[in-house]
Length: 398
Image (cartoon, rainbow, N blue to C red; front, side, top):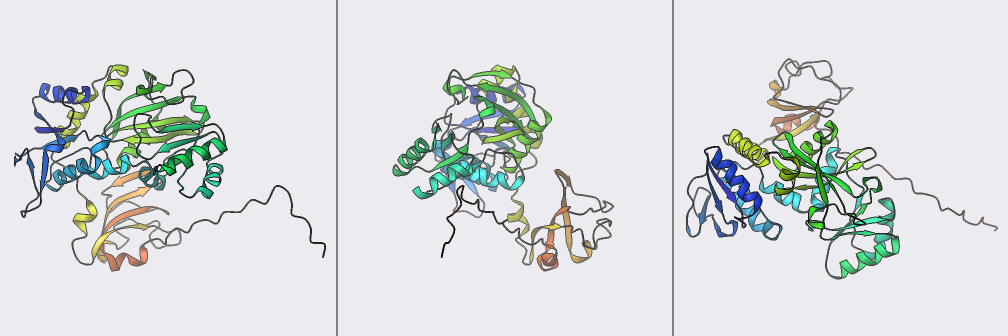
């Protein structure tokens, strides 16, 4: 396998470990400075230039894209994807995970546990937002902070309001997030590779510091994860479009709460804490998947006029319950079932003999008009009951 590491820090621990792991396994590996690429859109085939010369063929890349070059770096990765070069870290995964608000918006649609979060801009909305996430103390986060920078714990509502107003006045966008007191300055970093967690560590803040990041002086120790934490970490990474990711979770009273999904996780802390060859696991995964470049399913499947991808719901009162996929007549209507989602299970390429149950969700490709009447109605927002004032209004004496 011919592998390229996209990195601006060739001497960094993570870059060096990945390169060493690749060469030890007999692969050819080069470190390429991400900013020295030029995207060539002048020819019929997508192409790239590197240092002013035509880029040679690569089987796979592993992007190490820093926060300061997210836009350009993700564009380079996207171009590799268009060239059908395998990457375990997609361009969409990088941009989605780098923006904390966008990441939370995506994960919130998939029943991933997270601290309550609000995002507001008007001063009058700040105090109600603090109340909605559970009240003070409250955590305030910059949208693009890293390594614990831009994360503030405000002890009361007025302090929080003042901090947020100050940050807004400096053109900063911030998240208002629930403070998970039971985590006690600790969090879990799970390193996801493919469909499993290959290593995990617990990070603990020092002294009165509530941020557990190693860069803030936090200590680390190896930890064996509960299956619920493993499933959450893998699902969060895959939902974000990442086959290699660091998933940070708080230990809440009701289970794991995802704080962040990192598309460029450092390897030094977790390898030293666990003694595991995480870099080798990443290289092995890439070598195993190199024949399967990432595809944008909607982009590839919707180029035929009148055809597309849709999710169909097996309604309790419908005709499909108790029938097999073959008996459902979907194939006769020019509809192919790609995956079947049942509760938290995903069944890829289900057989025609698979029995359908109420509330199964079928990801299908086919004729859009044929699928139109089977697409579930849009979910309606539930009306919230307004709380009555603590003190009753005076009675009308007239």
